[in-house]
Length: 192
Image (cartoon, rainbow, N blue to C red; front, side):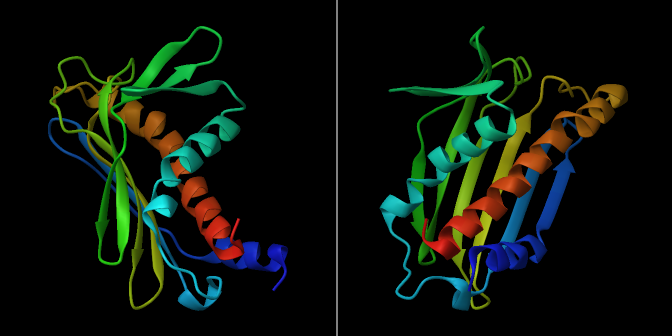
């Protein structure tokens, strides 16, 4: 099947989306789509090296969608999303932790700091990307877990701040995450 026709099929796949914020403005967001197994290249199988490409693939998509306004700085013990030119760290992460499970796996980056993280936020925030085989196909996903956005604050009485977060940063994340899961699905289907 031609790449354009396959892209049209992937574009039409439904994305399961979950978004919640707790009373302390802890965010959970997930985007998942399922690629039918018949669409994957013959002999396709998940490997640790394939899982290790998820983070760099996401970083490239983030930079492309931001028009290179956001750059990714990778060092031995830290990865930061920064505003280009001024190197202002928006979000920083610990190096990736890969977990193989259910014949697939998940790559997670612990959120460690940056301007977009609420001051005094509890530890535990994560950015995770997953490839998980199911009976229906390969589930391609991205999750943000236990994240506390600075713009939303950590005080549940800050309704305006929470609303502002949901109308701005959360929407941008949703657009980027949807693009990521679709582009990753296309890369897996075409073998690129």
